[in-house]
Amino acid sequence: MKSTIFKFNSMMASLLPLLFVFAIQSWRVTSQQYNNIFILAGQSNMAGRGGVNETTATWDGVVPPQCRPNPSILRLNAQLEWVEAQEPLHADIDVTKTNGVGPGMAFANRILEKQPGMGLIGLVPCAIGGTNISEWERGKVLYTRMMKRVKASLQLQGGGGVEALLWYQGESDTLLLSDAKSYRRRLRKFFSDLRADLNSPLLPIIQVALASGEGPYMEVVREAQLDTDLLNLRTVDAKGLPLGPDGLHLTTQAQVSLGQMMADAFLQFVPTSLPKNNALPIHNGAPPTRPYNGASQIYMLPILITFLILVSLTLL
Ligand SMILES: *[C@@H]1O[C@H](CO)[C@@H](O)[C@H](O)[C@H]1NC(C)=O
Ligand SMILES: *[C@@H]1O[C@H](CO)[C@@H](O)[C@H](O)[C@H]1NC(C)=O
Image (cartoon, rainbow, N blue to C red; front, side):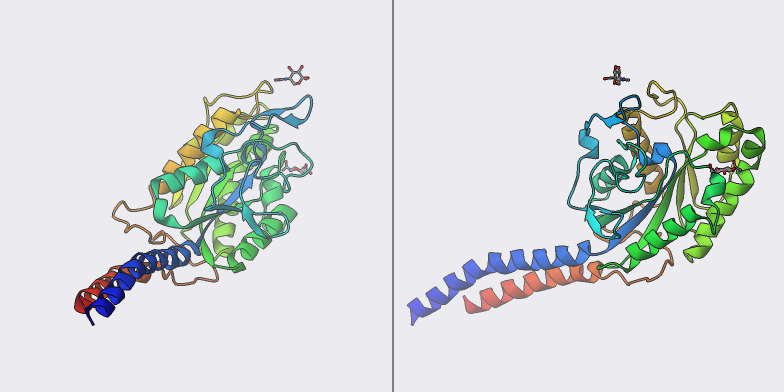
């Protein structure tokens, strides 16, 4: 009699860790299904030219530790599928150019480092080198393609929400004074159209104030960027970050700094009291909104463990 009880208890004892591991695993899978989607749009410095030799049109392949892949960072590829993200993020998007390191991976890694329980980061690269803001107007090809990609990303397995737009553009609008002067109006229009079309009037936007320009009117565009004052818009200033020999494109190290600056700007939207493993509270109304169910599972875990301990104590 005693020996059977003993056997049963030792069996329970060996099962407990297994059950524990299983409970943690199922909780992790659930909490990781939520995709925190970030739109990456703009021109070449968002697409990334870090490590690109413009003469030979080759990328040096150097990926700093801050830009390394992570199973929790996904990228929507050109076929509208989630794949594990790696540099260059825009390789199959900005296809007519040689892509290198941009701010996206450094951004995502920094977010995960500061908010480890956030779940998956889904990057949606849309930037195209050499494009002016008129080409990003609602109804134009670039805007339409961006919206198509964002909507596809929202409908993919796991669900999710758009957390922010990361925007770095304007170098091409520094060529003509008339363009530079229209930048302020066009920028506001672009931001508000995007928010309206995503049904997310307060969508966080992290934009970059120019570090360089193709023409002489960089300061006019920068002024427009720095002056634009919209709710939930944060501007990160890239001026002073190291540029490559072309004087236009950020170096790899500059892109790492920029990505981290953008992440820190975004994290200002996240209250520090945020419970671990919860979705970001700034979650907008972008369709389809799926209730985040990771949190309830967290509360289930201690209950389950207590139950298991009680059962084993009773059997003892
Ligand atoms: C680009 O490659 C060419 C040819 O190999 C080389 O001469 C040049 O120095 C390179 N430029 C930079 C900035 O590394
Ligand atoms: C923007 O770029 C397009 C394509 O290069 C060009 O046709 C157009 O004139 C430019 N528009 C402005 C306002 O600069």
